[in-house]
Image (cartoon, rainbow, N blue to C red; front, side, top):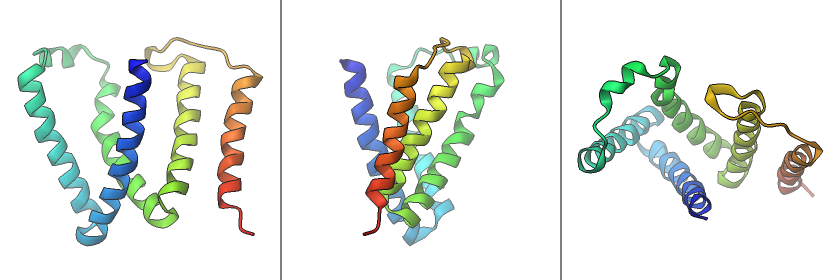
Length: 143
């Protein structure tokens, strides 16, 4: 149950952040907004780390180096969310983002990438994704 609550908070937060970043980007610029978002995130994360962190920074040298690309992906995510929300609107953009996330996550689990447990997908999972895609099409259907 706790995981579900965290996922709901994450989804709500991502939607708000996308809109906030898009509106700020209209005022100050996309890349300027990206800098502010990353900087405020760094400051908050540093404070939380100093208060509650495990102190295992040296273990970064033992981690798979591809996992260090999370910050790069953060920049890409902020930029692409802002641009898609600005051109498509929040609901349509988030719908497409969610479907893309689901398909990417399914591929990661299906192939067992990055240390995830490999799982098989049945017709039921494919129907679920298809229904989401149909939902986005119906949502944007022009009369």
